[in-house]
Length: 312
Image (cartoon, rainbow, N blue to C red; front, side, top):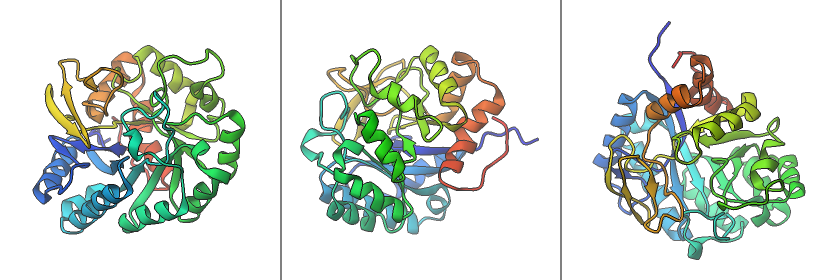
């Protein structure tokens, strides 16, 4: 059996010193990031553009599309685009690192602009169901073949169920994108886990976003529909130092935690999937088969792609 890891990552904001959310992303930068990801065992990933003004997001999406078309390596490993925002919950805690001035309610006009800029490569859109009036945008995105993922959100149980009924099928990094203090029972984490049979539930397995002991419990509850994503930013694959993600400049410490300057929230992850594989192995006591499902098989299944069979 081939024992080389073949990861598939649904959420990558940047890598190896390259920020995908910078203006005028250089061709050589994207190529370098793709080279390093492939060297680290990543067969494919979703390049992720996060909340900013619609005009800025359009430019960044179009830039990624153009550079990918010009580069054989990028065409091979960038399997699509993940648009995270701007249709998310603007409340403190739920919005996380997303700039509040650029957050807006879901609307068809802006959604069409973003998908057009993505040039047919949009595979995932993360939004807050409660920010989508009558779930019109969720319905439309599903009709376009896009996976709609709830995230940075706080829908009621009824709102979550209604979104599921019209095609919502994923949840973006559960345990994060929510306040540190929540109602002990009625909170977004409990609501989502109660619907695990209907959702692909994604987690950031760096031991920082969610402590390993809690992650192990969440993974058990999520069952066969759990997915691990890196949420990697430009520090991933490198180490401590100063890096960017969109508007943010982040100092990454020895623990590889990418905190905002005021430490109110994290700004992406400075770990990559190979490092998260070790967290899953040592911190969560998962088997090789389980790790393969979390980081390779399930992410592909969630997008309807063929699955790799190599063990991690």
